[in-house]
Length: 257
Image 1 (cartoon, rainbow, N blue to C red):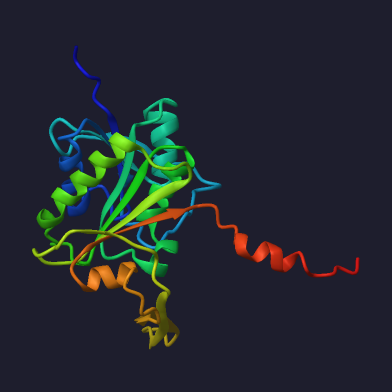
Image 2: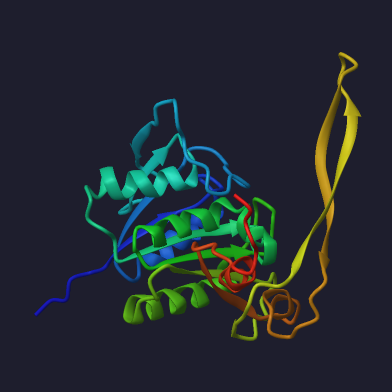
């Protein structure tokens, strides 16, 4: 008896022609039926933005032979919503994978990431979901060294599922010497941001966001530590942002109303 192939939704935030999504879709093609819905242009840093107040365009495209692909005018989260509701007509895929992002989405970056927000949207739809990112921001990034880890993690999630409301945030160090996979927590680290002020030809100021990444977390169980020591980091994250530990504290307050 022939086993039904899983359906795998592939999305990203770098755009449908990015090298990272090409690597991801070809790896997923080894595991099942691949459906790609990705932005028609880069959408990095969009977080969980959705398009409201203007129409979305969704066009079927023929870029890679044998892969069903759609280009979307919206955000990464829009791509997931349209994939589930329009392309797949309400039938949930067996897995949603996002990336492979050009650049890390470790620690605090998970909040800003379009890559991870697409994966989170998949989890909101109760689809087992993974976001993948590589520590290489260049358009010529080489993803070959991380593809075997991408495949293995996808195989594990297809076989075992994920707890409801949980999505995996996976980051890969650059280079060919990844030692293995580490299950981690998110580091207490952030960007110390600066704005480089410049003047345009009309004598008006404009600003470029710059900054330095600061890690204030010395733990050896974090994603930053794992990446610094050439491991692929895997952090289970959730979209329930309730600070459960703060509820007992707030319940001690007396409200005079």
